[in-house]
Length: 200
Image 1 (tube, rainbow, N blue to C red):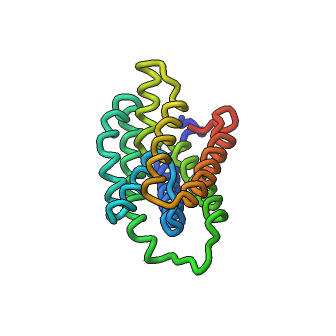
Image 2 (image 1 turned 60 degrees about the horizontal axis):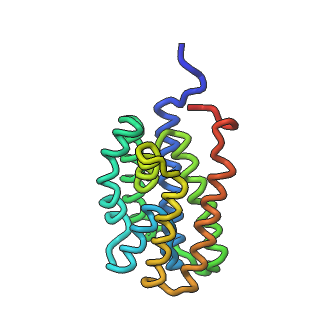
Image 3 (image 1 turned 90 degrees about the vertical axis):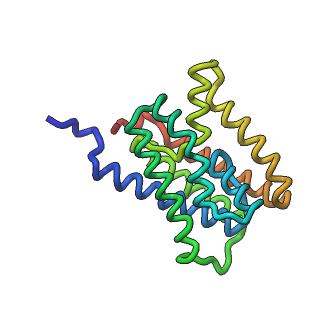
């Protein structure tokens, strides 16, 4: 007898497809406005701004070293799903800019929309046993090995990332970017509750 609470393969496929697509759309909003964000995606965005390289290949390459850590810490299921999510996001981020254009997009509103879209994308991936890789995996590993709180590790990384962003983009855009990053984290903090969402 199957557990009705567990996601099927089709459930996981649509969840990963939704999450990767919304995350890619969030990146389109972000890069259209010249903003940055935190975590591995933010690092890839900064590198793309500084070098002119496309976000998708940079993001995919940055995540490669993290799959082994993901496999060791989270297992093969998580690693495969995360690889698929990262690969799909990387591909869509190359394709979507040619399909979507903004005649007018206020940067402050755009930052909030980015936060909502990206937060919902990450929620979908988390609920289907995937992520967008990167620093979050390292943070959990350091918490396990050294006792460092994962949240503080991620916060420290983002603090350094935003400090570097001041050297790459205008200070005004960095400040607007803080709003987007705040909204992403609020969406996740408020909605990612295992005591409220129990399907595995």
